[in-house]
Length: 434
Image 1: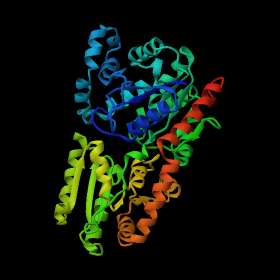
Image 2: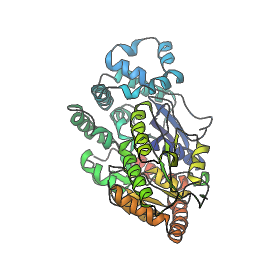
Image 3: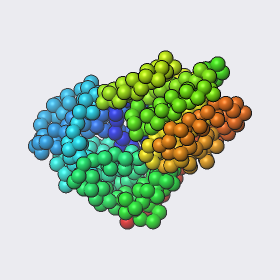
Image 4: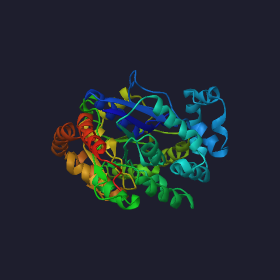
């Protein structure tokens, strides 16, 4: 099949969706498909070089912002738009994204979801022209449902079936101010009628989004995300320095406050001598104030020397990060749609402790590589971490189970097989499901 995958870039930090898309497209190519991944908004940030087929940013975030403000903007000369879409400009713009007001963020999100009815359509329509110029695609895949403003035009004007992945968009939309939050959800429901299938990474998220999108019976398929399992080495931590790891964006919503509080509690108990905490993942300028507050809390507890911070690391350093861990936890405060970091840790043979909500119970059951604790409860988290850190036999069992199960069910190859089946069904379907 000839597949076009549209995905937003982040510009300067890794995100789970980008890493999943990268692994998916590579695995589809291995399976013989002509799969292209076209970045939108900002340049992609992936673990490794994507290869000769990587495309430049098609619709830049700066151009969309200006189009939202000035409806005539798309008529300016092409050289000016190419200049604005230069990677260096887009990456510089991404470093200032935290300064965007909630109102502007709401306007931009709604503008994209309104599609041909929105102020941004002058720019978005150029993407349709670009797709036409690249020949006929069998199917077009959208990385997340915030791009579904394109779906009606893709199906009607290009006659190409559209599938759309779901990757935790609700946690973003629900933070938008009124009236944008409600208007965005209404637009998503309308757009859903032009999507053949939605692909959810977990049963939990499929059930959550089915009602919110007004999806038809059978329109949402469940397909776990996957990773290149061969890229991660088996952990071999120093037994003299038991180490708890965290690898996600450094924000409160990912549960970093809960983990820091649990670590302080655990260190005070004295039941795990010399316990350390390693914190890695994306850190943007807007996150610096929050991180500084945690560092002050750790210093007040006399533990700042037992905590390492590894922001915005390379893929090589990320693999090494997991290699040195004894246990792992990202105790997110909200219902995660998936949690790719769990699979990365388990693939590295590191047992995990996750809160008993969202997709985590599914992941723990499927991987057999960890245990659950009560959500938003630092004491429950500390108790679970203490048990694992003091029980080597249990850790070894969870490690062996996890490595085996991830390789069987959560590899990029397995993900591509499942994705291919959904695409074949979408192509065979005569029209959108509802």
